[in-house]
Amino acid sequence: MSKGLKEGVDFYYNELGYMVLTAAYHMANGKCCGNGCLNCPFDYINVPEPRRSELLQKRDHASKKNR
Image (cartoon, rainbow, N blue to C red; front, side, top):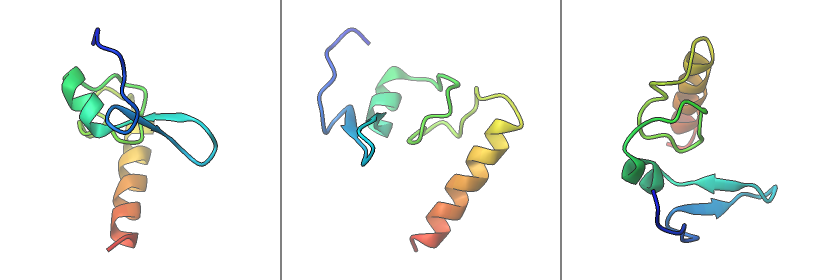
């Protein structure tokens, strides 16, 4: 992506001050980068195992907890 990032659209800062890319940013990028991003909309497809399974399990557990 060559455009500048826009806070609140492409990223936000978490409670520790880290920049977190949004799912919208990742969708615009068009693919999983393989870094295990918090908001990955691609089911971590390019993250190597066993990390991918760990991330999917963690995400699924968090979504069940928030229901």
